[in-house]
Length: 349
Image (cartoon, rainbow, N blue to C red; front, side):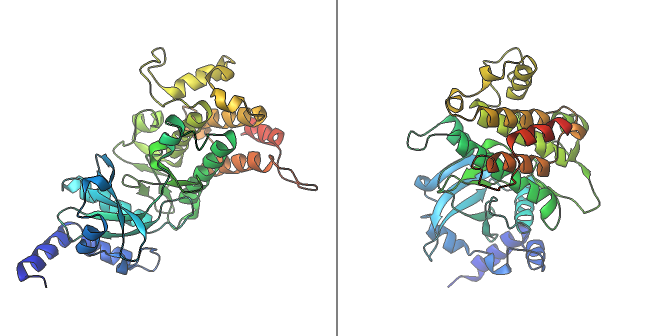
């Protein structure tokens, strides 16, 4: 049984970590995270073997991530927030509130949180096959990175972003789309993760003035100059991810001096000079999918337009990638869009 002192300490942490506000928000009818999903600190300690270092899956500026097992046998990920300060707690609360509005197969599922500890904790479903970054840049011989798999992942991520922008109850801009924030499940299906810097908009808003946040190499240059966040900022970042999938190269490299190390700039230059084949990953060129790859490259090029208004919406991108997929296995009488149709769509956008 807890002592009075322990009870008071937990209550103090709960209030400091925004627990009262969070309870009010999460009990709203539109929320997908119920009040019952507030985890007990003892349960998370038991799940992670008292946050044993052997359970650490990764560390970042927002905190440390542990693998754990709940009493019902579910394998989970416990994200322990970094040292408490107003900024970290705000990002934590923001992530819970944003994820409470989301229910999509290609977005990592938030199971709940714990607020009665010195630093807040988030609990997610466990996604077993690491990040897209690892999949592309640290390939495993047991799971070759085929063009078909890359196209599938790109389509799923675009579909998730399309849902966030136009299918969720309130439009959500992720603000930090990158290959390390895309996880892969047991079937190598994509799950978009890490919503700490995401922003929700009212239905009548199309842009938001914010302090610029994002990752070098993926950051929309227009947003970084204007502080005006729009849906096209996520489109630019997705374009960089698509280029990573096409080229197998990292978004920033000290080896690329002439374009300041930017993969996006190098890719655009290669396309402008008609040297696309020089930058594409040789692995995907071995496969009989050259027409599809060229169409995907043109989609990526449009996503990377310096002017946000000239970029496609992520919904258009998702539809075009789906069209490429549907053209892979035509059925008799199937009216699915061909890659030539997609090229026509791209040229007219």
